[in-house]
Length: 195
Image 1 (cartoon, rainbow, N blue to C red):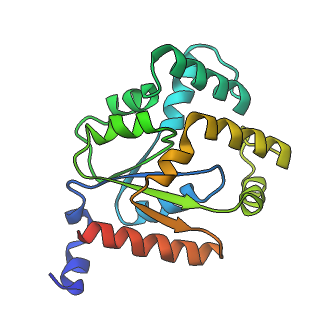
Image 2: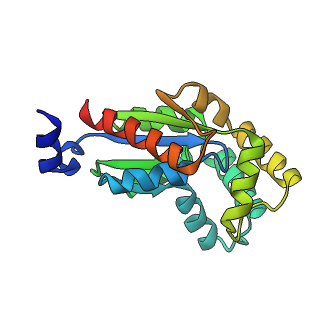
């Protein structure tokens, strides 16, 4: 099939089996990657939303620290894979998706055992760039200074996200402009959708 035929069909024809996990440290560019995937017809699901839903049910304060502590406690109580399990419960039979928020090897193993065509894409950016991006996005539950980012990074690394990044199938280095990153993201996604 040539590129003209692909354009005429639309990307939806290629989404039957593919699922992508996007991972990376806070502020690396995962949301921008997801926005490109959305343009290509993929739906996104955020494991963090699953955590927030369960936290809200338990009456947990909606702050980064409180939600992070809750997520950690649930992993200790139910196993490190618990957030992957709870997220996949709401995704039964869904394909053509990008999942954000995977934090450890146990979650990755859980998903690999249940999703047949799964690709892990890691987004990398240095801490200085990530801090600048986080401060510009003005999220209510976000960090507000370098010290807070270091603490959050350490928490995420303690969960095992570094292993997931190291074991990713593909990696994008987000060290340029937003437009450059979107071009890299689109190229990678289009290559995956053609396979």
